[in-house]
Length: 219
Image 1 (cartoon, rainbow, N blue to C red):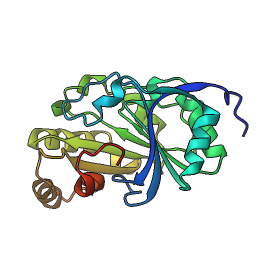
Image 2: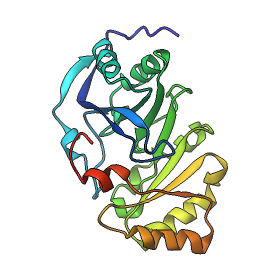
Image 3: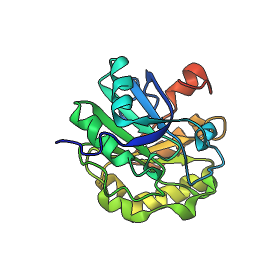
Image 4: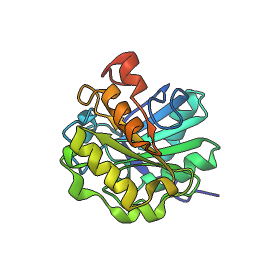
């Protein structure tokens, strides 16, 4: 599949390689492409530096930079990557180049136009995030079996709400569902106990990169 927008540009906050810290790809060597800009302001956001700044790069320049790192897995993240219209051709170009591509999206933007080869990680915002009202629920209809849904949980109220959404929307029948505690907030062991008690069909995850390097940027 050719990409007619190869000369298009995006605002890039950073490109780096690290170990994937979340999702079913946790621990894999991955190149991260962090796009600048986000329409949300979650209370626990750890990448506020990506709200602004960065530099304009063409798709060709981005692909060249990604290739330097020698990884098969690429994650496009933010900020909110879908806030930039040229995110979609970037995803196509990465897939065409043979990478295993995932997209981390906050759920406030329409994801229906994302290339089907991309594994979408859809973050459903909880009441505790402060941005629940921006969830685009029709994104659930665009999910494929290789996609993943993520809930970042601040407290027990968030957990109860996430369980309600899990059941109401039959989310576990759509794709993998991830429950993650806010780093430095909800205790991971507490979340694990709730999941075990309620026998939920979800994957619990903690942020591997936070355990290894804390909040160090570019990790």
